[in-house]
Image (tube, rainbow, N blue to C red):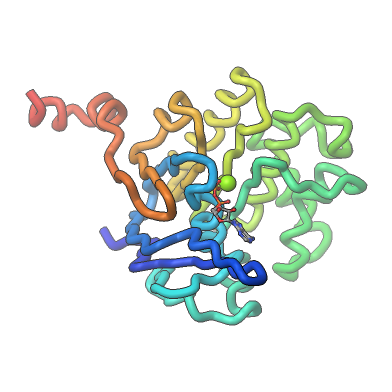
Length: 243
Ligand code: ADP
Ligand code: MG
C-alpha cells in the first residue's frame, strides 16, 4: 500500500527576532491509508509544529511533504487552503468553536467554503452531528455545552467535508478521563470507517488505542513502533508468528 503521507528530511525553524528555534530537525515519516498513529513526546518536542505541517496549516523550512502523491511543501497559501479543505480534518485541544454560532452553524461553516447551498449544508451538518451523538444539541451554543460535547462539535466540524485524514492535537487535553475515553471511542469509529487518524497525546492510556506510536524528542524522531498490544489482539496470524 502506498503512503498517503510521505515526509522526507522535514525541518521547521521559527525566526523570532535574533533567535531561531529549530522546532523540527529532519523528520522522515510515512503513514499509510487507514493507519491510526499516536504522536507523543515531551512539551516543546515539536508535535504541534509537525501536526500543523501535516495539516497544511504551515509550510516547512526545508524537506518535502507528499500528501496523496502531491508535493505540498512548496504550495502557496491558496493551494494549501484548497488541499486542506479537500483532504484534512483538524481537531484542536481548545476546540476553536465560534462562540456566537450554534452547534449546527459551527459544523456547517466549512461547507460554506466548499460552495454548498444552505439546505445541503444544514442537512450534512445535522447528519454528522447525529453520528457523534449530538443530534439533540443542534441549536445550542458552545457555552451551553459540556467540554466533551464541545469537542464532539469540533470533531463533527472536522468530518463534515468528508476528509480522508483526521488530525487531532491533544484532543482530550482539556477533558476528564471518562470523557476522554468517550472521545477516543469516536476517533476509533472514524478510523474503522476508513480514515487515516493521527493524534497527539501525552497520555499512555490514550496512545494505547493507536496502532502505531511515534515519539519525538527535540525536533527529531526518537522512536516509531507498532503498538504490539493492539496488533496481536486484532490479528491472529501475528500471534502465531510471535509464538
Ligand atoms: P509541542 O507541541 O511538542 O509542545 P511545539 O511544536 O509547539 O511543541 O514547539 C516546538 C518548539 O517550537 C518549541 O520550542 C516552541 O517554543 C517553538 N515554537 C512553536 N511554535 C512557534 C511559533 N509559532 N513561533 C516561534 N516558536 C515556536
Ligand atoms: Mg503542542
